[in-house]
Length: 103
Image (cartoon, rainbow, N blue to C red):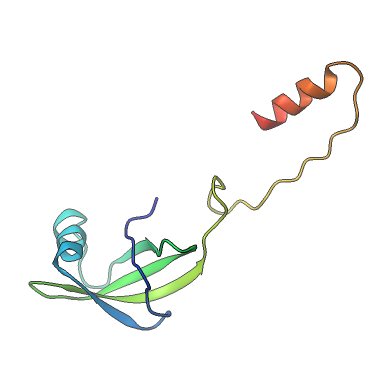
């Protein structure tokens, strides 16, 4: 689950100042403070983690800790693509096996 959407985040190691609406979400709703991390997505195929480095009354500053390509849609975290090789079976055997594998 993504906790934050950052459009055009800086590269890892750099910081970005987020406006008041992000501060309200991160500090008031999520109750994060300096040193805590939050997952983010950029909406363009990358995900990563950001660390809260400063909290001001009207903004919050986060440092991008990591950035990597997002996993394929529907793929659980830590699971790569799955390939299944089925033999040709007679009758409806192939259909039953294929249905079972997809379930």
